[in-house]
Image (cartoon, rainbow, N blue to C red):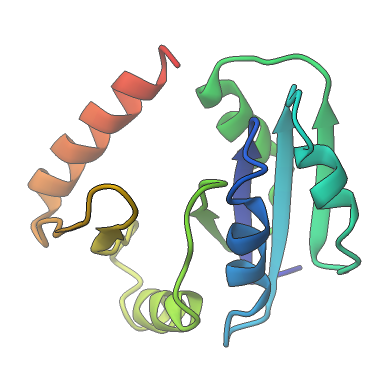
Length: 151
């Protein structure tokens, strides 16, 4: 069983998909499975995914587009890892993301969720810094997840 199950829903992400997948496959911590769930893409996303030949990738090819949260839940049901990590198909993870997160979680078994700051790049650049306080993290996560349930 892998230490981490990475869940990546994909819908028409051809523009960023190679970079997103490569950033996961090139992690310094390699004990993971990458569960890529196609959500009815109509662009070349499926072809891009199928070009990867890595035993850590599990590809689920759904022909219809569903609610984003449904695909995330599908990924959770398929996960074999001790930890679950989310990855969006238009994001890039720094190489030591998993190494740092696993080290922290292993040393702090009373902690159930970790996150990171993130940097937006492209047309608008900014750094988003999340709170380190559990209640603030919960409130932020609930707001984000609630908005995605309608996507």
